[in-house]
Length: 130
Length: 234
Image 1: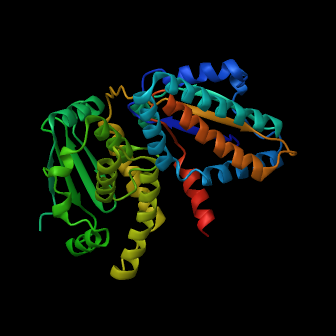
Image 2: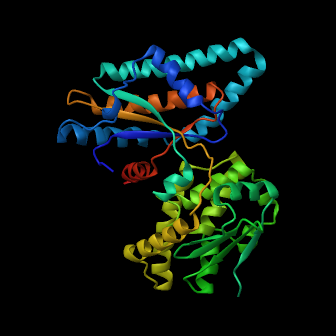
Image 3: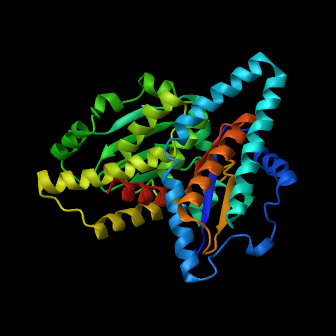
């Protein structure tokens, strides 16, 4: 495992519809070039300095994500409420959320940061066996 | 005193376990605890090992884990869905984190959280790590027992060996898909702003996932997360 990778992995919480991640990626990619640079898709800082910097950034970013689980409940409630009220609201919510993702990617790009998104399919027991 | 605690699993849980481990029995050994699962009979045993019964009692008290609370043909087990069971087992058997931690504590935390929120995950692993250091500190201080890192690693690697041999024919169909964000920066990127924006992006992805009907995304990088939190607390 290369230590120079600066990768954040987000795992899909069980119970989600199948292929949802792929669908998300497709919709994001329609609006933003998420980088399909093949084998070099993961990133190494080009020099030692950049690598250390990426590492620091990653640690700082993750430190801010402690409340994700709480937020998740709130978001699920919000979504379920939108579904219950009106289908149109549901689509508006979805569009808004997609916009937030793309806006964030654009802001990062403006800060000279490239973020490549990729869906990786894996199996639990295979991981254990490795 | 026999500390084995027997859990009788519901048929749905049994099916879930079998889907991961087929009919093979397996045993997880920690430095302090042992859990034994027999999918055929749908029984799970949890037992304290490696420390004397007195210390085991103390540990239970320390973590508010009266064995009677953990005994489970109780209502607690009833609240678990098949998915939750698979999840729980994943936590227990995760190569990066699950094994080297007190199994009993793991189960208890997992049950508490699963019952409350329907699941447990990253936070659970994080919490387990913290508890682990608390346990070793406690044993050293109160019982004069030393558990060096080396010893813990030995137990961990043994546990992993046991587990691997028990998993000779895996047939898990659990979807472990992850979304990876690979980050490239250059020297002109402002560190703090980028970190904030990356966190925003992770949150936005989580929110979008949920808006599209999913259950959300979580950071699958507990080691980094732990280190980051540790640094923040210092």
